[in-house]
Amino acid sequence: MQPELTASPLRDADLCVKCGMCLPHCPTYGVTRDESESPRGRIALMQVLASGAIPVNAAMEAHLDGCLTCRACEVVCPALVPYGRLIDAAREELARQRPARTRLPRLMAAVLTRPALRWTFALGVWLYQRAGLQWLVRKLRLLGRGRLARLESLLPRIHLPALPAASSRAEGEKVFLFANCTSPLVEPRVLDAAVQLLEALGCAVEVPAAQTCCGAQHQHAGLADDARACAARNVQAFVGEAPILGVASGCTAQLLEHQGPFARRARDIHDFIARHPHFPALSFAPLPAPHPTRVLLHTPCTQRNVVKAPDAVRRLLERIPGLQIEALDGACCGAAGSYFVTQPEMADALLEPKLARARDSGATLVVSSNVGCAMHLAAGLRRAGLSARVCHPLELLDAQRARPPAAAAAAPPARPG
Image (tube, rainbow, N blue to C red):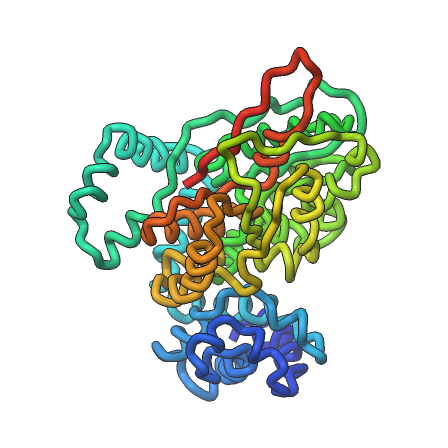
């Protein structure tokens, strides 16, 4: 057994007193009512895995892979069991014992961490979409209604943008912007909106070109060495003492869990802006007709349970006059990194209440601060035939920010997905 699983994480597992307080908060247990799909059930499996009492089998893998790592259980645990650390260690041990299970995660990790592969993939999807092939495939239902059709439905609208300028023209408090791997491709206006808002607060923004993937996908797939390699590259890219602001809550959560001073510099950009002393001086305009005055706010699990800034986005959006903000739903949407790709049945079961809420509310705009959640939500809305759009909160906020008369008029919210 690896020391990582048999030493500290095993002691962490022993902290669990099996009280069951986590059960009402676990999304997968809520769907299945299966103890093996609950935090305490999975911890029992981890203890068995660590002790070697039972060989790894398909059922054990399925239950451990079925965890969303939403970490809602951590928030309510009276024994303070570090469940996130435990599930990552268990998957690392599974990867060690069954290397074949890491083929797809390694492929996805390679695309995320290697710009040439990422842009090649993006270019292929871009051509597929711009040539009208995607429209034809979906219109004629050439892929049927099975798993392949669902996988194709997850493809967001791909863009081929460049990162914002590496160095800001503004002078003032220096901040770094963590761009993440996916936002530039599927939410191209988010990074520009982040830069514009930060500069309006008097910040000098830097977007290091050497930054790489946050490593969350690797970490949660049991590829700990690859996750540590990503962390090391980012430590080298973000040199200095300035705050590191993430625009996607999943990436920010991963940065916060690095070791040492780097983690202490990581901040959620929404919380940073909301708390900034110059933010009250900014003014915002109401959304012009025919844009909606009501939005459904989705709060990602990482924003709530790891970043621990669940109200930050609401505080920002409340500055837009006349905007009615309603919660989409408090439970996990099922995106969970690559989960909505690898675990489609559970992911879609968890998404269904969100779609029902969107359908019943009549809202035409959904706001989410995590790119993976936004992609999952947008795909589900499309499949359900709903017209609601998904938008990043920074896009909406910057679009409504009042500018000097000479500045260009604010653009309407983008339509990611």
